[in-house]
Image (cartoon, rainbow, N blue to C red; front, side):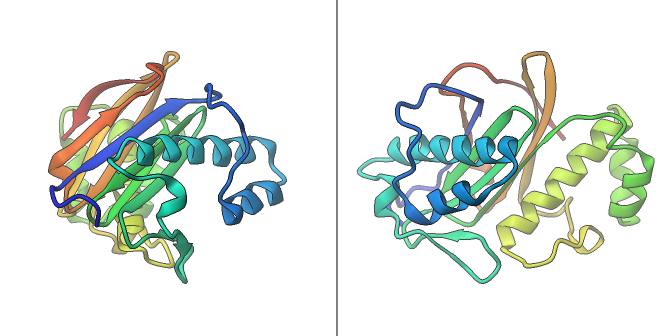
Length: 212
């Protein structure tokens, strides 16, 4: 790893944003984006990669092309220099860079989507107490979902099985964000999670509070 000191930097932005050329110099990612037939997903993949370029560029002496990036057998990007995780939802993209394994998930908060039906499918008995805390039920469900997703991504597993992913004991933090009057929930999981630091390079996303 490049830096000895623990770090976990989370970059968040709505898109599109000014990024100069929209060309992706890293051929494997450029090919992924080119092959994407859904225009919205294609744009998300493009801008989240551009955000990652910013995040890596802000680390001393680094750029994306020096990371020796490759995908593991489960499709997760790997590097021998730093750890990364990407996520996008709605009109927001997010990228995390860390000195240790990291998983990131962001979800546009839709009250109907994150209701009792989903809660019953993803929550273990011990996790159901999480819903009883002071906060809207659907917001808690969204928080639990993103925690499970981020932990799944941190571990680099192949199949996402929410009922077998322990969200509450994982090294994870969850935050409520606002962008253009819309709410998003973001969770990040990692050994360096206590060092989590948000960067909003275009000042178009606001971190409202941590969901505990």
